[in-house]
Image (cartoon, rainbow, N blue to C red; front, side, top):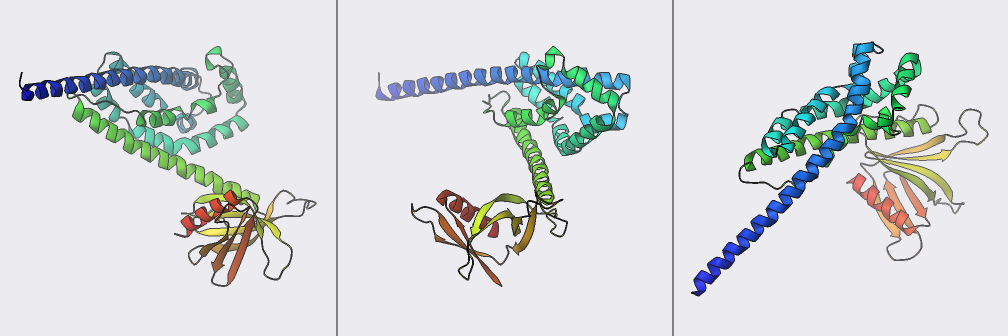
Length: 328
């Protein structure tokens, strides 16, 4: 047998082995996708069956309120149920193709989730019959101690989970699955961006409530929360170090101090001392480059220089990284 024939046979064996590996990976992925889809549907069915369907029939909530709380949840459930049927028959390509036609539902669901939670809390506060109904449904054994609030974010968690699957593509469904993966990734980014904006709004609101009065406006369009923490301010005239709470946002750096503990209204709040715009800020690490304990940062503004100290070197390093990134 010639060397060329041996080389050809070795190459053929390698291709066959690779094909077999891909087939095994395909089978594992498809099986895992089906198992997790069944589990997801079981949990989603709790909301659809024991809340949406019954509430519609009973009329406990007005249709507009019901729609605000649950949004397109029934349509999302139906789309996932159809996908599950396709997966059970081994029709991943057609299943994903059909599923992708309903992906926008997830985006709209994500955009509405904050308002849904707000409306749910409002109804629980003022609608006694709904409050009683919710409590009764959640005591059913099927819920296993889970609350409605725990189940409402499920579609977004599931979309993120689907986006992390490494789907093995066969030649038969290559184009369909490639397009499906692309569509799921795009909607997943849309959902994640919506969730990130909602979480940022909650952080801004939390900080606003921590501050005394309304003079300092934290809730500003386009502003992003980055971090917060206690740092020591080094005075310029040799006075004692002052411990202050700082809040870093995408555009400003806010310095605060605790209100007097005996204040009748603001004992648990912070008083704003200064708001420093970041667009003209220069950040330098004075010390803390080596393994020495603690560190010192210098923040230079047009009319002010701040020297900030921490006894923890990692803390000062993290602040330096966050501040330089925010200034950039």
